[in-house]
Image (cartoon, rainbow, N blue to C red; front, side):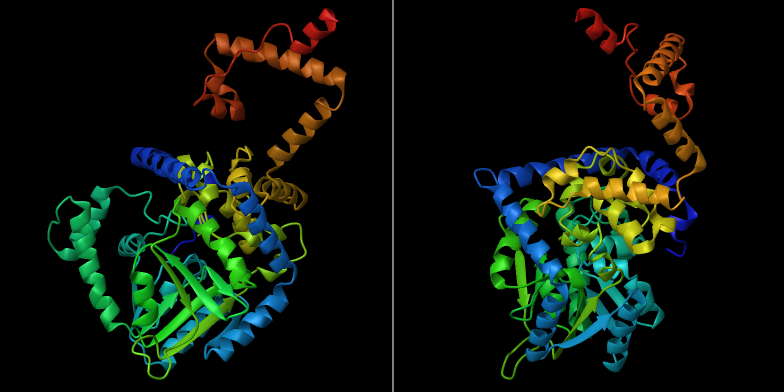
Length: 467
């Protein structure tokens, strides 16, 4: 996409586009309902809250001592024969990967699904260098063919119909493919097999990096992850610095959390633990392995009120329960991350000027707090970002004026009673006349809901008289 959605449109504008898609409004809630059901079934009969607390403690302890954990990880990676590169921002990360590809005389690249590579906009940079880049996760492959972007952290094409996928793959095939999921998958698998065989470089993300052993951990449900990391001559793993965990014992806690919260599985189909390039006498594996450690705004959050967002393990559970995300999908958020985690990460990584409105795209119901496997207080972080937006003067003047008037009106019992009596009367008249949809901002709320008519006698006055 040549135009940045965050600067060329507002959340409301993007949401309207998504809300006009009937399939999306059916498919996303259906898929996320299944994910939440599977999560609950996965941990039924287990102390899930206790496991979540262990996960929270591990992430908090690691972030409190992040630099030492990264130093330990770096030393262990180097001892395992892995080349380590540090990237302060997205541009530096892209340049490290481009340079490795150039020095390897690479012409073809295969990729594992990675939100970090989406974050740094890696694919366009590699294509600009003349490289042939192929996404090998089935959903990401379809997204790439369409010039689209993922809509969910775990399920990239949750927003597409099977007919749309069939149309895309038929265009690539040059013929009409059957409307059968298994046959469409077989076609994609056949195409991707050639990409695996011909690739010079395989690029992946990293779900975790184990400091004590220098191990990169990948959690996938398709065999493409292992193909990308073992068949090409070069393997490059892009890892956000916050994904480090101290020990393998810690990994034994984090794995069931990410697999259970993400897909409701006991364990994903593939857990790959990569600890270096092919050794002498070993029949497979890459000749060289590189790890690019990505900062890109993460260190700036350490020691701030937003540090806990670095605990995120990218499971997508908060998206599955968010009433806003479930209606508009991921594209309405305008960048890589959607849902509650996106509403927090985007303004923190890109600045309030670009993503500052996203914390408003929340009902503040707290469902994301309740389901997060590492207990990130997303509700509190969203509220703090709203406060920051006001303090920075980024909130529209009408919004600030309305909030100030509301605070003044409700700051004394007398003014509160006067305003609620007047407001209740206005709403009763408008409701009786069928004019609720014309009440400005309140009208937008009323268009999709039945607004109860306020009682003529307020509750507090009834209480006073009864006493």
